[in-house]
Image (cartoon, rainbow, N blue to C red):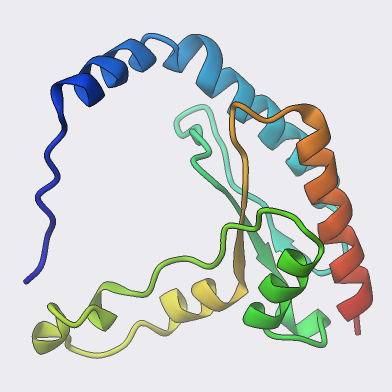
Length: 154
């Protein structure tokens, strides 16, 4: 059956309401600040296809940092790249979730495949970007990504 029915306890709701007050003053500024560090490190890095797009009309909140790699310039696939990053000890957050038509509950209604979405899933790694981190955590991730891309570079 499609969908979820999550129920919060009263204490979870109270904590959530309290944390919402910090969203604009602590959470978002830290996430966006760390994303700028990632942007600077990855924007011209060989093996990187693109970094997240921002514009005045559209600003990311950075739940995760999606980094697209250019697999044609690397001697590995997306899964091998993710495993190598994990082996470097970084909290690599994995790949994008599967397309909706891959979900068992939705398969009966699937009308084909989306090659673009599948290609994006293969070449996108989701890096951690948490407001509770310090700048040193971001730098550790950057060092690991650079090392792994250098090792797999064609």
